[in-house]
Image 1 (spheres, one colour):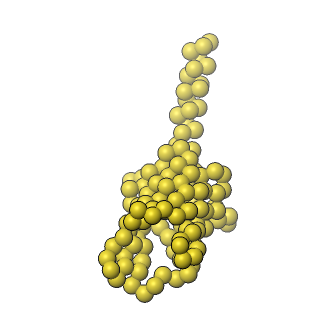
Image 2: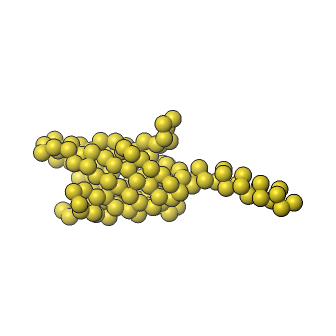
Image 3: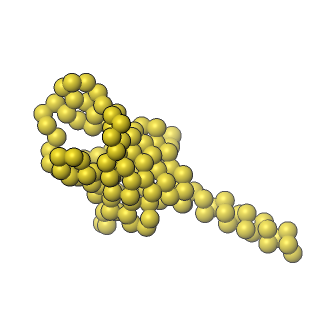
Length: 128
């Protein structure tokens, strides 16, 4: 009886873990509190054959001419925590931003770190 109960618990934990690890999957309206004001974007996180992808669109205010942020790289989703990197192309050269955060239901809270500085980076799931 105890062995059967243990088997059921282990099976439940095995199937529950992937869903929790994917809590960041979906579409988000994300906002960074930069020193010169808020920057918002629509962030899309998808499950892929190789892991996950992170892409952004509809950046507000629009980036300055010659600036663009690439897709997410080194994406890690563990439980309700996430981290990933993006490279921002600028006229002065590339900049790396490292994002870290935690998902709670339909929101996430975290930080964006660039050149040793950290800013709040938060999001709300887009309901369709």
